[in-house]
Length: 394
Image (cartoon, rainbow, N blue to C red; front, top):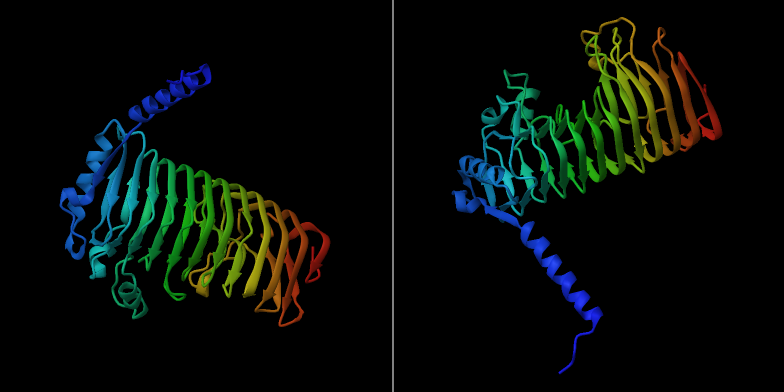
């Protein structure tokens, strides 16, 4: 019989320690079918999902809510925080489906709303919000509800969203509001190019947010960045159709928090209305935008590849016709290349009261119909380094 040497004893001790750790950190699983959910897409499973959440939330263990394959009909739901469970993972192998009648969700602000939660992860699955019928109502100028955001996190921390598909949201697809430490990766967002107000991912009043390797096709901003956003990192995002990646619109209110320390890199824009945009209404505001890096972006037939618009007023309706109070400074555009579908590929239309300062163009190469494009500058100060096409107006 072979004797165990000291190294073997050490290995066995390590294995016992690992088993002990795993036994104390085991995940308690809750299958929504056990709470009465039906995967037929016809039976309302709202109550079952809320019961599964309450069970997971009240557990002292790390928990998983499991949604098997199938289609689950769900109304508007609010998942409240204050949970005992330190970590709740919602693993979705099926599709969550909104009611066919758009008015059921349309009168709500959100379809799936998480508020005051900590340590929640959503893995996989699809969310089908059935938005086209509401879009058609709005197109006919009928008396329509505003519509619901598909997935929102409010006043929450340590959030993970991975490999999720959001389809045909009534309004915004994903909203991150008042949150901290959020990681969004591998998310796909799909809505028609003419769908109204269907922003892909909206971030505001939040810090330490990462958006990585996402594909966004929608009718409004692929990513919209609102007041109070700090430490945002966006990388390897493909956008189009849509209105591009926008900081703003800002100056909606007189007292408004600023946007700072934002990095947008390795992004691709395909036939979008805008590429990299900062927009503010022409009215007084205490807000600001500073410390923004737009790096290594590819434009394919984009209407406005690089734009700062401090006279933002869509459709020229009810324009304030004042002067924007938003202060914009320290903005870098580096490694931006591709094609513009309009002659003016770079447009800086800044506030006469608060000119844009510290604007830097470096290694920018944008063309228009295989011809030189143009730049337009108003109330802006900055510099161009290395190759910059079209010729800089800074």
